[in-house]
Image 1 (cartoon, rainbow, N blue to C red):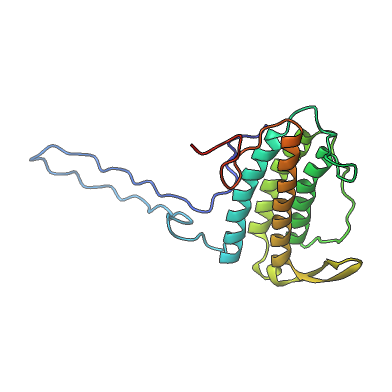
Image 2: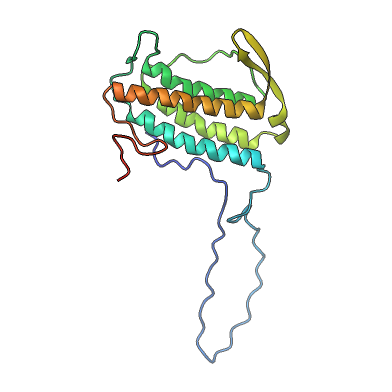
Length: 213
């Protein structure tokens, strides 16, 4: 499992070295001139060059929701991958695969490789496999969004707008659509966790299995 992964850094800190102390009464030796170090790309409280407010907002929220989703995936009981609460519901492993597919959609859009109905790998056999693929692709997604041209956020792609209908959608809106849809599927999965015999973790606040007290 990938735990404690540093997913994305939006700022850097400059560590200042302390000046050496000298004995009283002694003159300080002439300081040797050294080449001035390059300034860090960003210091605390300053935005890194090239990262727009729209990208920053999305990436910070994606990283926050990613951590919550990984907790829910980790809470799913092993060996219950075929569990589904209703005959019309998808199996747990298939539901977990939705997070992987949504990451892939964002990566394609950010790289200018969007297709509405791409060929994708079939769902894995277990929730644990889907979890690892989701965590792995998350870094690729954030790098793709960070590195994409800012102008691409305002480009449009064809997307579903209703039953049997399609229409243009801005890539900026598509990114948020996929993120919010993953939050929706995470809510579904949290119900699966409880019904399959697992313990539901804290998501936005306390749960019965993880109270804040």
